[in-house]
Amino acid sequence: MLIISLSLLASLLYVLATGHVLSRLFHKEGPSQKLTVLLSTGAILAHMLVLVNSVFTHDGQDLSTVNVAMLTCWVIVVSVTTVSLKFPATLLLPVVYGFAAILLIASLFIPHHIIMQSINVDLGLVVHISLSLLAYCILIIATLYAVQFFYIDKRLKEKDLAIMNSHLPPLMLVERQLYQLLTVGTGIFTLALMSGFIFLEGMFAKEVIHKTVLSIIAWLVFATVTMGHHRFGWRGKPVVFAILGASGLVTLAYFGSRFIQEVILVKF
Image (cartoon, rainbow, N blue to C red; front, top):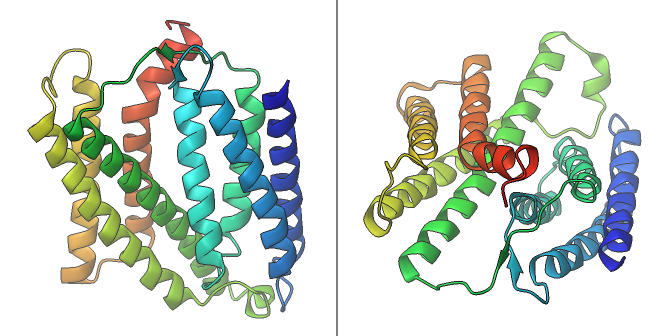
């Protein structure tokens, strides 16, 4: 009952924050930062309490795909909200808040109970998981910046006067932050893959080979785009679509098979 109440509270606050930002999206002064921070902070705290009560149970640790997804979503929400305090992120906030609200509501209906009585703390495994989670979060945020860049660029090319007087960030600022995030995320993703091959056994075992192959393909796309931008000045729509595709692959690599096994096939 506590988890249900907290999930509904967090979702409501996320929805209110989303509605406020969207309602002031094309206003010259933009959304109220104080109100946005107030609503989002309440949502983030409630979201965190949901995670604590969902993961740490009386029977052990519940590390199901849904809980891992909620944790990843929480990290992204906190990161984007923090960034928005210093840099304009008007288009990103409703996306991450809206998705967080949907995920919290969905978690109430999706079965997810994979209890681990004890967790073997292996340093190599901890390093690999930490780097992988950090890289994924940064690259997803970079993907959101890519979508924001594409949207603003398209509206400017269409000579939409509404965007001229909106609170949306300058296109060049979005582009610069996009490639900064992409560079950092790709670097950490490289370390995550290297740590996997160094510390983990069976990266090409039958059970996980699809994850490894998809991750490597995604890494190749991210690395190619990053190097292409820095060396040859690649930018624009093809780069945005490449980043979206790579993000989709790396998401599928981790969450795809686990979601099918845990939710659709109910193999706990």
